[in-house]
Amino acid sequence: MVEQVPLERSTRELIAETKAREEAFARVRNVMAEATGTAHDVDDTIEVTVDARGRLRNLWLAPNAVNWGPERLGSLIVEVAQVAMREATQASYNKVALLLGEDMTYLIEQLSGQRAPARAEHDDPGMTVEEFQRRREERLRAAGEPGGPSGPSGPSGPSGAGGPGGAGGATPPAAADDDYDLDTFDPATLRSDR
Image (tube, rainbow, N blue to C red; front, side, top):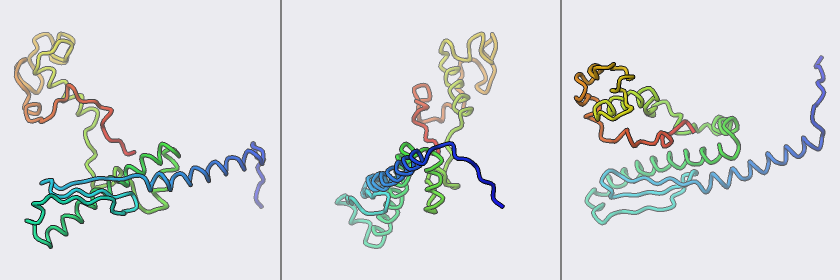
């Protein structure tokens, strides 16, 4: 026998909630149709824009694209379109998450069978917060900036020597290889799984 549990909401409240969800799902279709992704090849000879449903919105070919030959050009267009499709899919999930919330968006992912590209197993997870902080501290230490870890309260102690960079003013090997400036990097630009 099934136990009956009293509802804490009235029938009108349940109907209003159901209508609100129906409207939100109707907006989801529009949001997903409007989301686009654009990608180009490394030589900037091909640029493709598609929507989240995979429809081609724009294809641009540089005049020197003919040098690839028909077979290679065709396969490059397909490869670039796939990258653009992943970008469009992620953009649509990001917009849906703002509209419906994370839990409902994850449910849509499961129902559609198409995971958000940011959740893909083969995807680069990016830099951890700890790695970001470690690299920042190394760069500050190397630059000898005040308030950085090279000061008396920093991990290297009063001498300023120590840590992965060796002597106080030496550039750490990991920081010397970086092509970007972690001092001015905005962590808000890091991609989350949404």
